Amino acid sequence: MSFANYKLGVVVATAVGLFSFFSYILYQIYPGVKLLLFVLTFTLGVLYISKGLANKYLLTSIASICILVLIGAIIGYGQVSSNLSSVSFYVPIVLGVFICRSFDSFFNVAKVFFIINLIAMLYEFYTFSFLFEPEVDLPHFVGRAKGLLAYSKEAANFVILFSIVFVKKLGMKWYLPIIAFAFLTGSRLAILICCAVIMFEIVYPMLFGVEKKTVVRNLSVFLLFVILIIYYLSLEQSSLIVSRLYESFNTEHSSNSERIYFWVEHLNVYDQFAILQLIFGYPGASVKFVGNGAESAWINLIVDGGMVAFSVYSFSMLMIFFMVTNKVRVLFMLLLLSTAMQIARVNLGFVDSTIYWGWFWSLLITSLAKVRNVEK
Image (cartoon, rainbow, N blue to C red):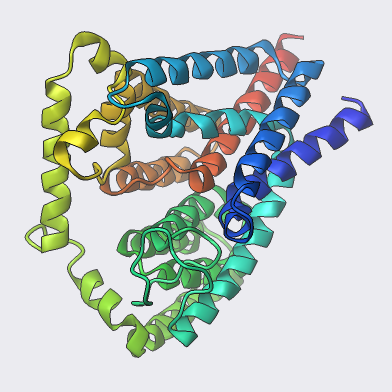
């Protein structure tokens, strides 16, 4: 790859990062900038891959995704614009292709955004106020910070994918910021998933004969986490979140029982689909009939994208398992992600899903490169 093409790759990856992470805050400042940034990002991405920087597998994948989006727009329940919105989970797959060859540049943008957003969330938590009006959350602060993102659940989804994909690369100095970010979102799922990720990173090396100083360091980090969590539990801002956290595994609690109810209702609607709709989905139909979202990424994929969309996401996880060397670690992380996707709409938004698909495509092109080198 020439230096000019390398620089273009860095620009594209940076543009994707800016679009994914900062588009909401830019939208608040100037509403038209989100669409402008997306068009610019997509144009740069197409220019990048058209210069022969992507192999035939990536180009075929992009063409296939565009066809699936077109099918969803045509066969969906509502108007074309609303149908496109219902199958927007396909867009991060293409964005992932754009950044896979310069994934480190995207990673750097993600780190910068993480720190900026963490600072913004700390401000919200200690002032009981939002920096910018949330898109979905209550207009008044109830212990669920969001920072520069649209709403607290989006912040939760971001930190879940950020921790699962990047925690090994980030190292121990990032453990505390990740846990703090998860708690500030007020999301029970983000708190539990991120704590599980960090605990794995602390405990797993201790099971395989690491140096004594590493064991002491890990235990010290664990003790620090315990102290900080106790401090968080004592704060007035966390009272509502703590009470909800205690009910996380109680299926009879109203929030949990409602979630399960919506799962069943959406699957009942899917059961009534025609053959074509079972295969490609019926975008927007189940939300219209049920009156609420599916509250599950997997079910969302099935009803709006059919078995095709469900297979695309599930098969990508299977491929990741075989492409990553440490099978124990990647299996644990993928199980956490799959569980999170069942419980909430994790890995379907631009912010979180772009991280996942950039990771997937970067692993794929690295694996293909190794295969070609072996064949030579």
